[in-house]
Image (cartoon, rainbow over all chains, first blue to last red; front, top):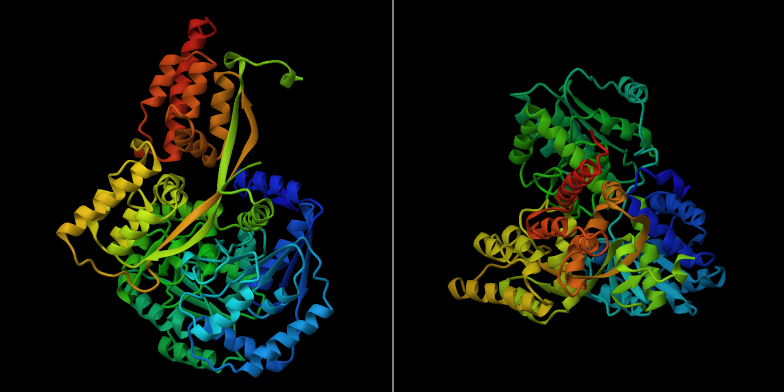
Length: 403
Length: 231
């Protein structure tokens, strides 16, 4: 499995991965989260566990279960850590603990290293054994609700380390805090190479014309992704360059706000035949891949963003990406080098025009973007970093470790 | 078997090594220049090292030459200060303390002229990190110039960083590993001098690869001509 990444991931990453894996071979690495499917954490774990197994590490993945009350509460915790105001009383915290206690009783927590993902299973640390325990916080905790971060912090202090996606989330806890950005898998359906026939098949099926440049944004229909701003930018561009706009996202049947935004976007598009609003079913990874590959320019015009891995996905296809300067997007787009960062609708339109009118620049930017992702945002780098943190905590080797 | 025989410098092959770092937060941050100055003065040597020397691992695709300058220019929009901080060459400093003092001096002078600097936007503060660095052999050795040339074209840029940049802080003579080996083991003193004349501060790791490869290619060609191998 790991051999499949040879020639794709940087040589040094693969080499260090193997050396770290050799030093940890035969040891057990348990991951715990709260869902097997859906969401970025599950998506990356589905790919990561087999790779770790192929490296000789006995990786396992356990899911905690709970009732509706538990998940309602943990949703509130999630929102509060992201800065929303939520009320969580002692009884709810007690329920959070009891559910984890019940899970701990039925779960094999005996592992050399345990990585707990997000706040739902965080109380499991109460039942930790003598091994390395790490909390992986995927949430933006740069401006959390204080009483909630204090309660979570009491659990977090029992870990050996915490891992965040970006630096600005760190600093709140008294344990070692590492920064490990998320990643994409270059071999998954969403990112693997596609043949021209595969791309053409998706274009035909979804009715996307390919005789003109395609401007694409892939995202949920959420006001923070600014889909109407994208349409306004497209209209500014359209006065000068004939092009097609594709807005692709998944339906949000369980999200009333999402449906509202989608209707708003449809109305705003007002039957322009060159605006294609695509509602793709869940797991349309190959179609998203094909759309990104047929695009001339990719947008992620977010006003607010977590990490925004769709940016890295677009960059991996060798495309110039224009992104809103929000969340983790500036970590992926180095302005003017691996893409453009924008702060307004006008800026978005201007950068699209620049790219449509300067093919060599767009091509060079796309190539640099792909290389930047190759160096920084592939799954092999993320696994390398997880093993490196585990090795660091086990060896107490200081800031320089010779392997 | 090789390990049982004492190898002299002249026979010692060049063993390529690489370093890769993982980032660790110090938990410290700065929202404005005053705070930046205070934290720079007190933060760990590892953190200063990471934000300056290790910047050369980033391929210079950012506008300035260290993280402090980049933040001053982009987040605080204090462009003159960003230029002054960019002009500090870490490789001209003998120790981290010297570099720390140089950074603090530049910020102090700037604050004398502009005592009321603005705050960064929330979330855009400067976050002080440090690293845990793993060093490992990449399994490539060179015994002569031709092998060295092929290897140099093959290795990751992290290798070039380790031997050409990081070596300056590791080796007492303050030089790079490449020129030292060429001089000590292959007795290529002139070639070593040429490599030492390359200003590391002004180049990316890829440019260093190109420059040194070019110099070695010339040397190999010249050696072959001298030996009468080429007509």
